[in-house]
Length: 224
Ligand code: HEC
Picture (cartoon, rainbow, N blue to C red):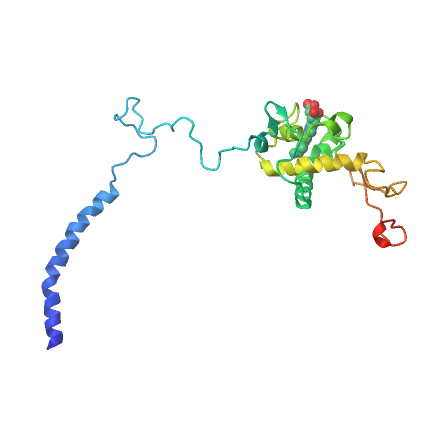
């Protein structure tokens, strides 16, 4: 009996619910046909007849506020700066070496002497990194060359992210030191002579390889 009464009560609500459904269905059309402009549609609301507005002057897109100018240009004012915008760790050098081997060696060779494979096939010979001029060039200069290009060399701003360009800068400096370090700079350790050479197949470049490590030849103090 109780149940039947409940059922009847529900029955009386039915018409109201149907009515509500019909009314709400009317709203649906409004959602389909919203009062907005399609991109680049014409509008006579503004004097220039364009519905799209130009961004307010000075607007910066999200993620593009390059506040740290040095990080993105390598320049201090108009000139190249001579410091790294972040500390050089082993990870930075490894990354720099990897990116350098991918993007720069085709022309500059792994050694940086400018005798890469493309050059051997006729492309203009870049200067060696191991000249006095480039050994003394400030760090920001290498960043600028990659970012803006240099003479016959295209820029690599699109292909290499700014942080990776800095990693390459650090690696080039290490590469330069590796070819010009003095006895004093390597802490008095003996340089094996003649230094063992590794010839890269197909290229004229020779790379010095580290001397084989064995307890007999090791002169390091750690041993004692
Ligand atoms: C397609 C070949 C090519 C590639 C790849 C290339 N370079 Fe070069 N690079 C050149 C040439 C050619 C020059 C000399 C341009 C000139 O003097 O007109 C040069 C010059 C340079 C110089 C010396 C600028 C100077 O003051 O003389 C630097 C530094 C340099 N490149 C760095 C790089 C780095 C770093 C990369 C990798 C991101 C790279 N290059 C990739 C061809 C290349």
